[in-house]
Length: 165
Image (cartoon, rainbow, N blue to C red; front, side, top):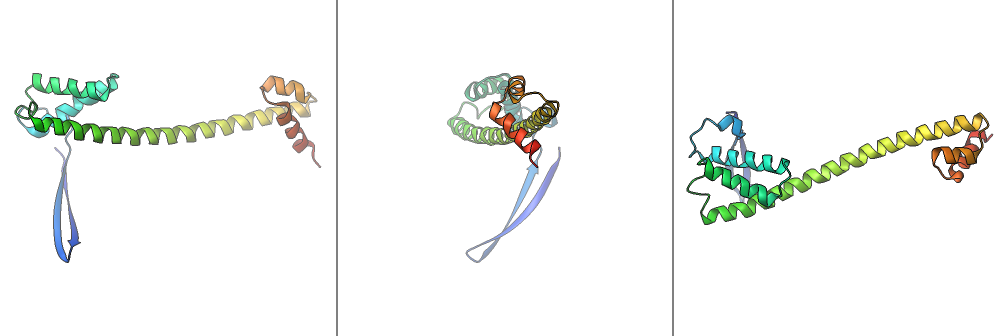
């Protein structure tokens, strides 16, 4: 199991506070040989099942319920999973998961826009080049507009720019 530590210092009302944070890799594959009552292994198992169910297309709530059921079947998180604290965990987990997914969706949307813009520019350039070649060969703007599914005004604008002196 890989773990690292970081120490942070901060001042609050003139007092110096030092906090040590230990970061632990909790992927279930690294913890699966732990005892079932190991809470860290239980949470890792829970999240692994949850992510698998999300990838299978289940809603967040159904994936959460499926992960909870699998934890019960495999003796993970016993003594916790049926208590009221689990309901609080559920609420926090759903809020956090929705926030992460919203951030991921926003990132994906931005990447998609950038990709689409680049493809659109490349396509526009290729059409403009083909139209220019057609105009130089004497093909009429109307024919080119029909061939490339573009407004004739766009073709005429390219023609004006191409033959402007």
